[in-house]
Length: 194
Length: 131
Image 1 (cartoon, one colour):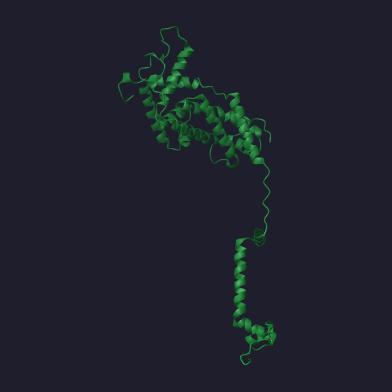
Image 2 (cartoon, rainbow over the protein chains, first blue to last red):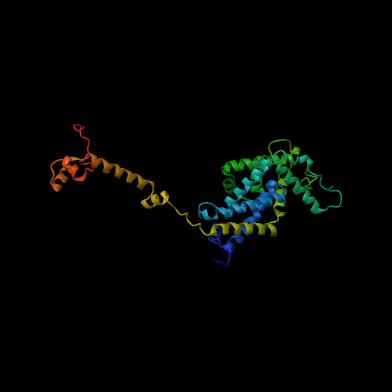
């Protein structure tokens, strides 16, 4: 079946089209959902190659479940982000014990030297990633979904299969922990006192 | 901020600015090779579903017989009917016996029995009187 504007078709309808043999629907779903899956996995794992593997794995699970998908029962994106979160959690558990200490973050460029803004930004983002990696797993996941991926609390609750109150608690504790982990790095990271 | 001394914490405003920066720096494109791998998986999954259904296995012997009568439940029914038939034949209920007597014109079950039983050993039986 051909369609003129894939963007106008809901995710679950695209999935049903794919299950019925429409290969273009797979391309549309990949373009629509893949980048966010990769981003989520990258932030959770802090490793690009592993994040790509997780993305491929998560999408493969989507292709496999397509024939059994019941339209209207669940959001495809929420289901996929939950699968991604679980795959990341599995990998994090397997590699547990090998985390880098926040104190090992390379010192950012000295702000007194001629500023290389790109390097400075890279240092800030690396510091954030390492601080995230130091958080307990569920706090990290909630903070990433809320503050970096921009999901609302109800959707995060569905993805993590917990209540919205639990999401609020996790994100609040996660942010408090980040402010402790990044303490003392404000000037180094280029954030001046107000 | 409620816990810890102010100087021991990264300012919340700076943390929000860091989140904003991280969101802005996000590359929202999939690398071409990853896209190709994902679509190859999709193709493989779709092809697997479209494979022609395997031909049903042919049944032979006992399986074929069982299938022809309708499976195990039918076999159980057949066995029950067989046992009931034998039982009725050996010890016929009065209604059956009377009906047969009226139909065949015989007087007793012994006579009825003789109608059906051929004594193939007639004349060759053992007689206690014979030496």
